[in-house]
Image (cartoon, rainbow, N blue to C red; front, side, top):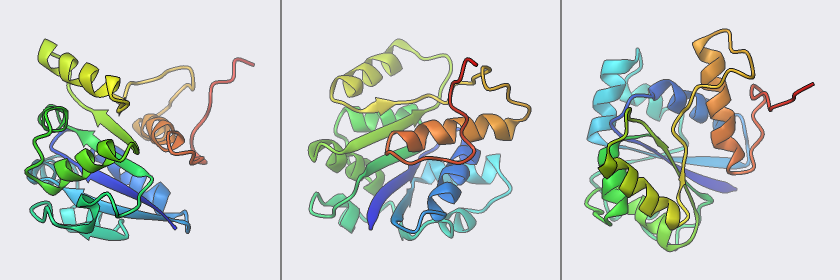
Length: 187
């Protein structure tokens, strides 16, 4: 069984989180370990028709963000890595500066120290110089930053098509094929 930590922080993009969790739920050999920040809970409430409990029900394991002693806070708990989707600039800053005062931040810190894959679906626009410096620093450590950019080569016809595309790109980082993801094909 492969484990993947999913963090939700307080940035716009909850439909992408739901799409990622649903896609992973279809894979019997993957276990999702979910942690939601306080800002993430607020964003779920403001941005979607879901409750935090409904989104948590899409995960296999759910952790309290205040429990910095949870299993995902230890390098001995084997995972394939972590996705923070969406990832606020506050969370980017906390990770970049090793400010691990919550479980989400501690889990990301552990993923970095264990040299596992950490993917941040960073949400903000425009980026400030502070945001860019934090993201550059993380990128230089091997963290993957993937702002959910719109693409048009796949001729999206709906917001769901755009969500499916970024979901496919996110899962691709972990070697997971997503059946709704259309790869570039110039023919």
